[in-house]
Length: 323
Image: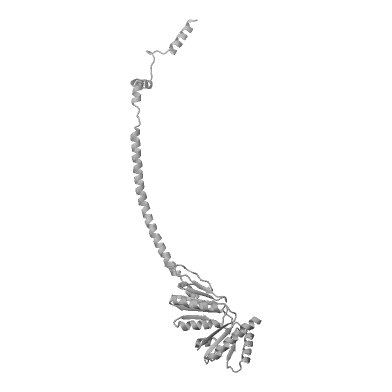
């Protein structure tokens, strides 16, 4: 190897091999090495400097925090919930009070064109209507012990009494007038409304008004029993001594007779034939009579009328049996 090459190799080897005495460090490297050397690595010191958590203190703090939160929350809820409840309660009471007032003010009868609005806003329950009975000829008897205010306008008459009795039928008969006449004689303080037509173009309606409920029940039961008894036979007779002016007017008879009687249930010409047979057999009896569409009226003295009505009823039953 030449001398020149030998020097080059030595120079390269010298540069590549570090020497503690010849190596110079930068200021940054020197500071870093100094910090590291100032704090030698010691496993015990490192472990002691680690901050260990105190779980008991943390749990205690967490429990205190939860208690404070619940206490605060309960106080907040009580404060915020109590007031709306009170306002709601007051609002409900006011609303119900207004609703009751409005309903009571509207709780009036509105019977127009056959339509009726019923408002059940009474403070206490009323006594319901009582059905007395229905006779074999179709006559119904009802008792209204305590008429509702909104239903008073549905009756035909002017209802002023506390209870009302009603007798109604699709057909009119003279016997109904005799029953009404007897009732009015027995109870002169009773008010009534009557619809009766001998031409049979409309039905029979009787409304009775009386303050005494007990007496009203007695009257209606008696009327029902009388009508039901008369309806069991085809031919029925009615008679009265000293007829009232009211009854004579309804039957369109004059008031010069001591007794009157009615035989009902026969057509016009059947009554005609019975009278003809009776007069032929008893020419000396002075009997006055009047033939209507469905009944025969007799007028005269007490004895004459009483005998005539018995004989004619007997003949009518025999005649119907033959026919």
